[in-house]
Amino acid sequence: MENYKTVEESQVAITELMLPAHSNFGGKVHGGYILNLMDQIAFACASKHSQRYCVTASVNRVNFLNPIEVGELVTLKASINFTGRTSMVVGVRVESENITTGETKHCNSSYFTMVAKGPNGENVSIPGLLVKNEQGVRRFARSKYRKLEAQKRDTKFESSSFKASDYLEELTKENCKIVLD
Image 1 (tube, rainbow, N blue to C red):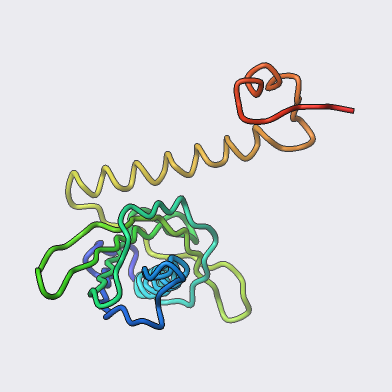
Image 2 (spheres, rainbow, N blue to C red):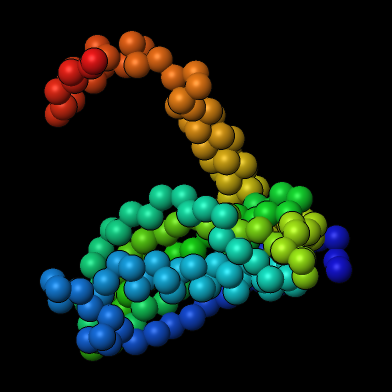
């Protein structure tokens, strides 16, 4: 296994025609179907980088920016943004294209944390990322800090250390009624 790989070595893209079977009750392509495609391409990219079977550990925020219509082509692009010891962050971008007008829309982007697995299900080491340009530095740093912020957020609200009294005044400005026992 190589010690480092470039982003380009594991980039993956797929394009698929959106069919009526992919639509929801509102006539748009179902978000769950798009999430499934995103998970598949994140897996392909991570497995290509690590040369291992990979599993999804987490998905960082998926915002559906524009609806996707039946009959449009959807292109998903994935690349490695960050590598840890056994995990990697895969950036996934989704775009749709109206095949008659050529108009393209950015539909969403998300970040999948994928973990490489060995033959017995254990986490295994992966190659690092060879960063070659400023964009790569930005993506790697952003992923690193996103991971650190998520860890802080998770520990801030652990039930063993959480104090409701710290948030009561702030929550009175929200659409909720607090009646504590």
